[in-house]
Amino acid sequence: MKKTKGYLPTKACAACGGACCKKLPGSTAPKDWGAPDRKKMTRRLTAALGQKYAIDWWEEDADNPEMEFVRPSTTEQVGLIRDPSWGGECVFLTGSGCSLPFSKRPYECRMLEPCPPGCIQHAGEPKLGAAKLWVPYQDVILEAERIASSK
View 1 (cartoon, rainbow, N blue to C red):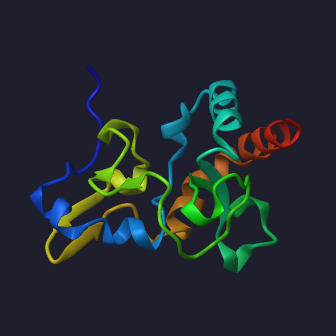
View 2 (view 1 turned 90 degrees about the vertical axis):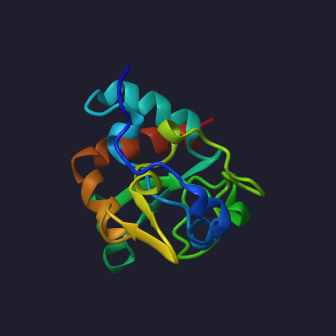
View 3 (view 1 turned 180 degrees about the vertical axis):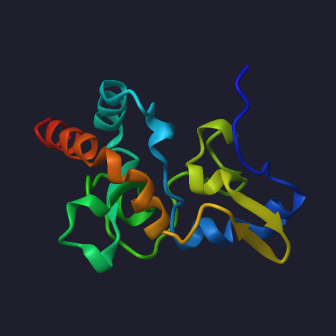
C-alpha cells in the first residue's frame, strides 16, 4: 500500500474547528490528479472542474496563464470552473472536519502540521506555492477547462 505524504490530523485539529479551511481551501498538486500521466490528469480534472474543484491563479500574474492551479471550490462559489477568491470556506469542510479521507485531501491540506495554537504549512506560500507546482501542467489545466466548459 502506498503511503500518503503529509501530516496526519491530531486531536488539536478537532479543537481547531477548521480555522484554515474556513479561510480558503488548500491547493492540490499535479500528483493529486495522476501526474505525470497527462491523459489521466485531464480526465480527472475535467470531471472535477465546476463540481467541487476550481481553477485559481496567482493574482500578481493574473495575465500569465502559467500561474494557474487547481483547488477545491469555496462554498460560495461551488459550480464555477474558475474561482480566484482569496477567501471562503472549503466545500469539503463539515461540522466534524474534512469530508475527504486523508489520502484524498489536497496536497496543501496534507502538508499542514498540527502545532497548536495553529498549524505549520510545509507546502510553501499559499497560492504562489501551488502555482509553481502546476507550471509544467498548464496545458492539462487548459484542456480540462475547455472540455468541462463545453459540457
